[in-house]
Length: 363
Image (tube, rainbow, N blue to C red; front, side, top):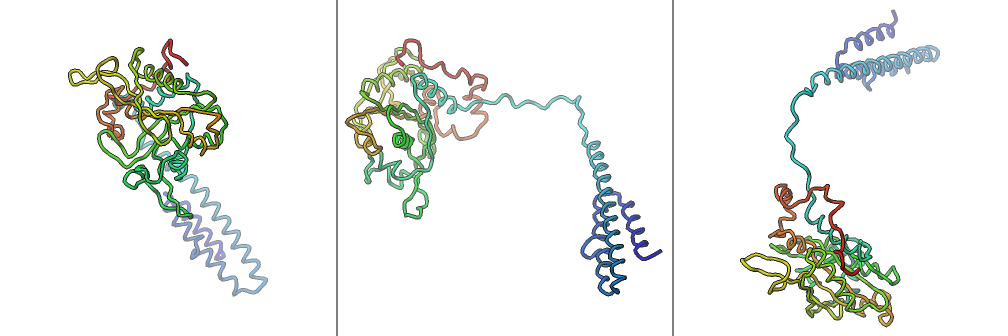
């Protein structure tokens, strides 16, 4: 028997004797590795005569192909055997009782509140608009007529990011108003949108969070006036809180991006230390509003002499706290399943989150 025949016989025996994938890998390395016995045979070809070198080279390559195929076949057999053994060891007893259920999931109050708000305004013909959370100074401040000395531009109120190549610092948007600007700059009137989304300010206590949600609205068109603003928001407040005769008042205020501006209050009572929304001897501020400032219209490419509009904005967390009796804003973000089970909503209720405007409300 030649040396190659003897080598093949030894390697075949070693392959057949391997009873695990690890043992087979050792045989593979011994035979085919860089320092393996077949590789060593190939290295001897240089010392042979040309005629002998050709024949021996062919024989060594044939041996290499045969051993490679035998190892692959053995690997398939051992893999199947290992899987069969694993399935046998990890067999499940399907007769065992199921593990205790964690219960049905719950819809977060913020998600539900956003759905309710959008359902009401959808009945009024509003479309939903979205925009980036990271904004430029122009969209977040300048276009909205916010002067350079305004407190909202200061470090203690706003989250600024690393300056870009021009030296300008992007900002985490402090309101969703930049989406209004972006919409006006790319769309001709009429415009009727609401903008729900995340906003960011440097504040944190029982009624403020560094990240929170707003929903703003914008209506632009011919002949839009304060009466349209009042009718729209009165209908919204009464529909959202489910009180048909809810008192709503508009109190003069100031915002750089609207003129005139108004805070919107709803009637309430605080008898017995509790809060009840509806007729009462007290008022509760819930949102800000006003007619879009002529400078904002001009900054967005509109002619203030031809079109007018109104805008409004509300904190989603504040509305959710008032409607569902949640005392502390910070608990919205504690990821506490017990809290969510108490304040959350069963997902099957989602298709009927809100019926929109109450019967008789203006559209």
